[in-house]
Structures are given as structure tokens and as C-alpha cells.
Image (cartoon, rainbow, N blue to C red):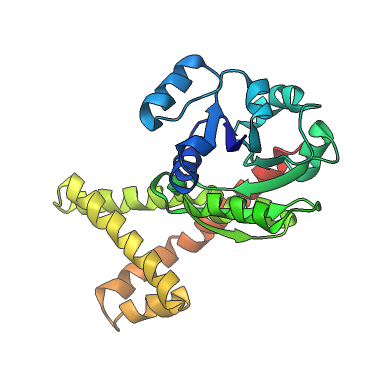
Length: 266
């Protein structure tokens, strides 16, 4: 029996698969997807053998990773229901689908791990939130799960009630950062910097600033103040951001994101 089987190899499934290959080896992972063509493409990219039939994958994997879209869950659940063994674990990264929701579909005795990865997992810099169902997991099983999450970035454990908030903080927020990088680069281009150079400058600046927050553990406000010399260019720019609602725009975006996450549960 293989350690991990992925059900769905899309934007989230693929980086998790790549991380699993590095952490556990090609012989310990497999996957299935909606089309044979997609599976063949993944085979060419990764060298990992796929399993066409979901029922066969269920029989041959200790941990099953649900990496499908919410609208695909019902179809997948019907094939999983009644076929899971008590020693198997289901890991779900489906947005707004709770542990309770999955247990209702797969059975109350099913052991569930709910995770919320984000797209930087594609470059092994993802941020993943994690919570376990109220079932018994051995230390070895937890180690396997957490080793998987470590393979494509960082993770933290949170109560499930905070998962919708996690969508705001890390699940959707890379898009906001990309928008900021694009806007900053556009402004640089306006003043004569070549576009490719402008993207590199903006992206590296965001990367470096984020690394300073993580490594110094200083409050972002302290780091901001350190850059803002009295009467200088930076404080002038910060003031313009404040005057034009930068903070309130971010807050409004997270509010909209949170509300949408709640709506998706209905």
C-alpha cells in the first residue's frame, strides 16, 4: 500500500504531489484525475504512475488527499463512501467544506484532516493551515501529514472555526499581493523602467520585506517606521497610500473574501 494518493491534480494538487515525491519518494505516491490526458501529462512531468479508477486508488493508499473543486465533492464522495478502511485518513483541501460535511458524506468514523494551502506551494513557499477531526491519530500518522505539508512550504495548526478566516489571511491573499506587485511595476514603467525589470524589482522587494517580518519578528509597523525618514520620499508615499484608503481597501477585500467563504457553505 502506498502512503499517499491524490484525488485531483490541479493548482493545489500538483504542488502537493511534487512535495510528496521529494519527501516520500516516487514509489510512495500516486494520483488520479478527471481525464486520462491530464494523468498522462502529469506522468510526463513527474514520472509518477497514476491510477485510472478511483476505487483502485482507494484500495491502495493509506492517506487520500481530496484536491478537487467543491462542486466535484459529491461525485467523489459517492465513490469513496463505504470503501474506506478504518486505518485510512482523508485529507481535504476543499474550500468551505467542513470536517462535519465530509463525515456526513463518508461516514462518522472517517478520520479527516482539513488543510488550507495556498498557491505559493507551487514554489515550495506555501502557507497551510491544518486541523484534525476529533478522532485518534497516531504520532506516526501526524508526522506523515506534517511532513507532507512541510514539503511545499510552512504550516500552522488552528481550530477549525478559524478556517474561513485563514482563507482571508493566506488562502486568497496571494492574489492581493500579485495585484500590488503589478500596480507597483506599472508605476515604475510609467517613469521609464523596463517592464521586466520593474516586475523583478517589485517582486524581490515584496519577498525581501516579507522575509524581514518573518526573520526579525518585529511588528510590521516598526519596520515601516524604520524606512520612513522625516520629510523623506517614503513617508510621502506612505501618506498617499493612507489618504487613498490602502488599509481600508485591504480590510474590505478580506471582508468580501470571508463573506464569500461563508456563502459557499450554504
